Length: 218
Length: 61
Image 1 (cartoon, helix red, strand yellow):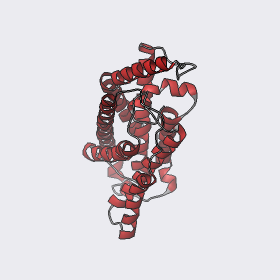
Image 2 (cartoon, rainbow over the protein chains, first blue to last red; image 1 turned 180 degrees about the vertical axis):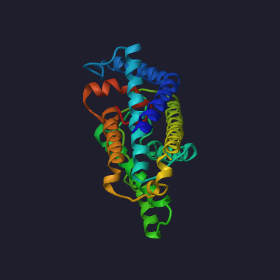
Image 3 (cartoon, rainbow over the protein chains, first blue to last red; image 1 turned 45 degrees about the horizontal axis):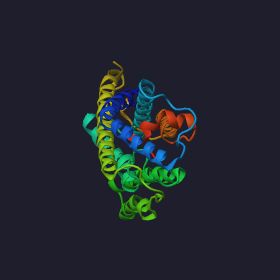
Image 4 (cartoon, rainbow over the protein chains, first blue to last red; image 1 turned 90 degrees about the vertical axis):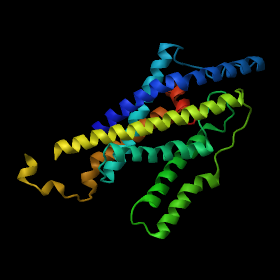
């Protein structure tokens, strides 16, 4: 638990710091386009009800949410490794982090790339279901494929798990984009690059802490 | 000190559900936190985590 909390909080905090200067400015400019489109169409704003005020309040909520998601991903990664009885050091942890990035970052992004606000999207519930299903299927697929001593039927099952979500296909977006394509592209690259960095850090830091813990107990 | 008293006892790894309960609890904790931050449709949770959801590729509107 300590490994998950400390590595998740640290990697999450670093992710927040990097995204604050790379991804958040893109969200802000996308929102400017979104609001302009709403105004010309004479529509009310999308977001009603409570929202954090722009400035430090919004920034602190983003920081909190990013750190919490870091802790959540850390608990998922190091909890699974502990359930499987695997011990990790910094180097192995980095590799596990990259594998988790493939499951929770790259695979869902093939069908539902990270999007700034103001982009045409499909129904939220359908997208959440496809995203979570793809992450789960990719995790099972990689596990069946890459674990040592697998028989061929299991490996083929792994390939099926990896490809199934993409054969089913992600929910299709409806509506129109209020945001220029160039901005959307920059956002996807910035989001994937920073989350990739996060997973690498999470695995490395968590692996380092676990190996020191193990050494102290031995 | 403990290791020198019983050099092999602590090295044996036997897979049992009971022995893995703490790890399973950590895993479940992670799922609950991720659901709250990335998926909860509760409006305040969504508004508070809005930028983090977009930035980290969680589905958001």
